[in-house]
Image 1 (cartoon, rainbow, N blue to C red):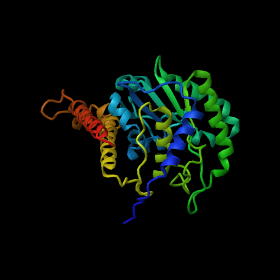
Image 2: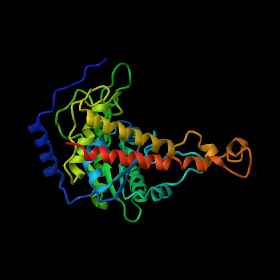
Image 3: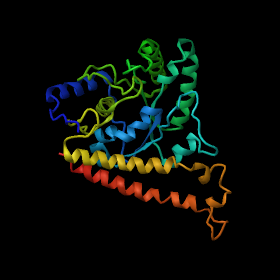
Image 4: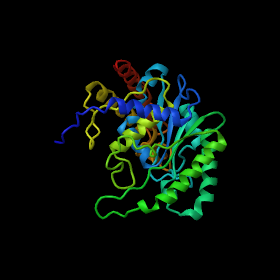
Length: 317
């Protein structure tokens, strides 16, 4: 069983870190408002955000004070060029409208950068078109710079030599945000308490990488005092502060309910190309489709878990 790290972060270093963020980020007033619904969009790193729960944990006090809700719409393999979905899967416009999204947090560019420098103009064009769809008429947009490549363990391919090109893609995103009035966050520039590695395989963030990203996000976009990272096991991410770990686990449980509702494993029977199959219908009356109604049972479960999250957040010291 791995030993937990019980050494608290240096308080002066933490305060200096948040001061550095506040000075260099150019804060222009609170972004997250009461009853906001924050949607996360991107590839595998975004999918993993809901499994670690660190960003929501870092915003726990903001959530309790403003009744925020978070919906993860990440999908492995998504790029600004293409987001493959099953037959009849709702469009981005339909999905964001259904959940009432008011803020969209997007992370793209890592996979796209592997196309090389010659693809940057197409990347800029595709990113702008896609982000405009996400923004709709009045949604705030936050763009997170893509995760840097690292030298991976073992015999995995080393893509870290592509980081100069990746930096050009990130710069293009920053210029796009400046032009469109969107927020841009680069959490990888600071050397604050740098770990040996931020990724698990040279590509995707590990627990430490997700925790670091969460700290930067909360320091930049939280109006309420952010929930600081507590000592945690560097491999599992388990926090040694019991009340905070209970809150994180409640966040993760809520996110799992949302994932099961939004991305059901048997979509083909729910709304795809197998809705006419007998197993998709009530055996007592084949005119009745039982699956759509059954899926809606998830919604009160999600709402109940969100109430639990807010209650636990209110008890934080």
